[in-house]
Image (cartoon, rainbow over all chains, first blue to last red; front, side, top):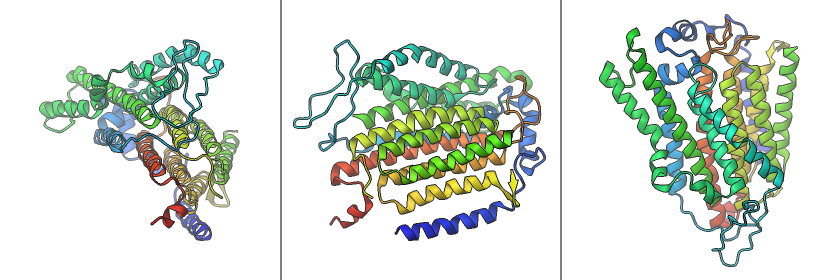
Length: 253
Length: 81
Length: 116
């Protein structure tokens, strides 16, 4: 099996390198990739969308359907992971479970009879550092969401940073304390806020312009465009962050 | 100079990927994968893609590696050679 | 950088893709297979972004002190969507692997094939 795999890989590599050899050299400003649609977006993007970050403009305005379906994809992944049966890991080895520092409240649960789980306490260095920089990470995520249409940043970036922040806090402080940040009834709706807000904004766009997820093109309607874009970015950020955090919670417990 | 940086980063990526292939301890493989993700984030920044770099840094080292470690905690730690 | 008529950056992406493909095909541990899938996905993203870059160019955020030539923004958008899809696939695959281990006690494909 191993030799078959190695042979397949060598054949695939040779084929792909032969195919790649015909491509124009990367990095030149007059390559074909910079000429057609990309050049149009870079020239007229600021006037047409009102945003200066062209990547966010492409994501939300020019290729909005891709982003819509991608939000649906990550929501579907969460549904798939939640749909799997969640039995207790009866034969798991020693799990690393975080205990909340010196407060005495441990995050380990004592329900599984007969399993030996070692509660490895969190190192005080990790505890201190996470407590110190968590607010700054949250501010940075909010800033990249708020300024995502001017500077590098935007919906996905702040979703990933918020999600990683949730995971770091849950690893250090224990999942119960972090799970209380988002109460369960709100959590169910917050997970779906990505696709829901996208569908809402797309419907509004349809009412305004006759095209699903269409943006009004007059220069006077730029406030409406900005409102739609901000709603979409908030939807992506909040939905993505809650989905990533929930994926972590489901896979841990 | 940026050519040399480019070449060094890509060589580093390939060698880290080779160590991921050869690791039998799964936890070591996941840690090396997080390192791969970090070097990839630097490559994105060098290519003029700061959005992609931010997302890759947060997702690769933050979310994906943690999910792998949680799965290793529930299953086995080493691969049968 | 071009060497012997071969674009080295593209070739490095191809090599990474093939390393991931080898892990996916030839390793029998399910977790290694998922790691290989992730390496393949990142190699494809590297290829796409490298195709859209400009040597010494600026990121495509207009007006924040950047000047033309800009890197093309469309590959960046595709790769962002791709990263989220990669996370989704990895999460579902890892949840399935945990379930397989809870039921059968092993995550090696060779041993799973022997089961009745």
